[in-house]
Image 1 (cartoon, rainbow over the protein chains, first blue to last red):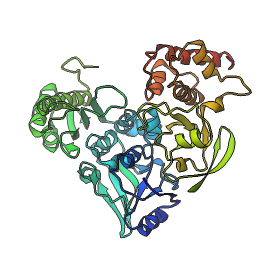
Image 2: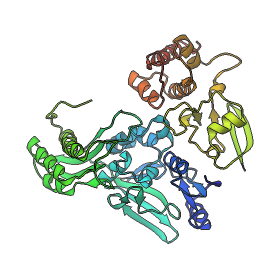
Image 3: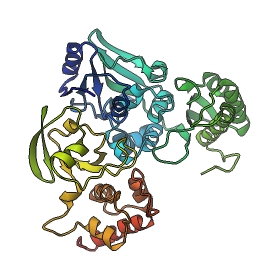
Image 4: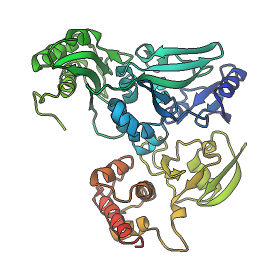
Length: 293
Length: 159
């Protein structure tokens, strides 16, 4: 596998180490995905550059109404952070269901994003939160909207052989915002989702505002259901409106047949059910069917 | 080879390792600490769990060099002067092992849980155990062992 394992003590040093190895080195954070890829021969990096010792990589703070996270915040830190539980419960709850406890102690938000698996729990939440990532490359810094970050299965707008994700940011939840994640997997722990839905909205005087719905895996990348969001914007938060949005969701998703996850037809119907349940929770209305445990 | 310096069970250790060696192999093959078991080698089963700076991690997918400068605790580090740790004794008394292969991993996650949260709820216990597989016990005796350890800690610590 890799022939050298190096620690970067700063972002500049990480960039320098990557540049020096000209595409042969890549970043590692928790390594819970990357190590397995290396073992399967899916990662040809000769040198791993560990970024978890860079100061500030684990910070969690609120500044001027925005939540600012170091890219190396682990799932365990995100799940247990009092600030995130209050201001971004969608993210802290998503991080509680990733892998098992030992994986959450090492796996990071940046790693979850860069691994770019289409149903990744933290990625879905961060996309629903309209999150952005700061990426630093030898050419400079840029902020990339996470809704536009993934480009395919395992592919994203960050080159881990020359760039570093340093910071994540998104607006803190207002008091009238609610969010819900619906996740169906064969078992609760250590199981990839058959279907995963994250929904978020403000409910003001009984009406939906700022609706965001993300569904995965129904495409190579997490899918924002923007037409459903537009349909609900300003509408009364009623069962009828939610049912219309769920029906529309079914027509917008085209999951493929999967030996692991079930047939495309089944999962297309499932997406509608789970979008409906998530929106019912967001609207604070009783589920229109009995929840399956 | 690369130099790895860490603390293992309270003792400073420096040794040469291959850059792509895993912590589980260094503990078992170079340091002789074979209490840490390797089950799946892909981070699914939890048998290889050890604590790094108090956090439970999967040593079979943890690059050994990632432990540089850290404090590692293995099952061997729990026993003091021949006396079992309260968690170990509770596993014995609750008969929470059958084949025993998964037991060191379970004991370590319970140790990590109780160090941080000496009065866990049943849900918190189940969440802490969720990353470890046991194919013999059906988990009931394991949960009883955790409850027993919690009771003994509350009553003053010793088994």
